[in-house]
Picture 1 (cartoon, rainbow, N blue to C red):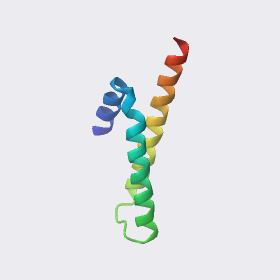
Picture 2: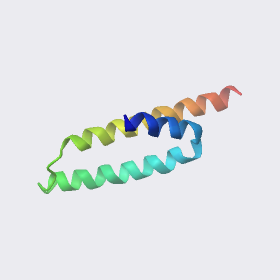
Picture 3: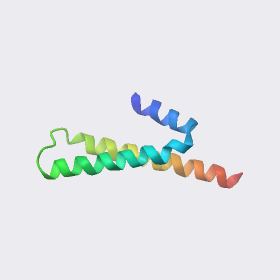
Amino acid sequence: MAKESILSRLRSKPEEVADEEGKLLKELMELRVQNAQGQLKETHKIREVRKSIAQLKTLSKEQEEINNND
């Protein structure tokens, strides 16, 4: 499960969350363009990237709440 290792790595390095989210948003945009042009064969990747972005946003929100409680 590669996704879990990415999330655990980002939990230990919170400064990389925004950078990783930016990369995933760019990838999502590229996938959507390819899909609109009919070039994307693996359409499931759009869903996977959206799920990863949601997980990162949840992670950043958790970290924000932890910082506000301190």
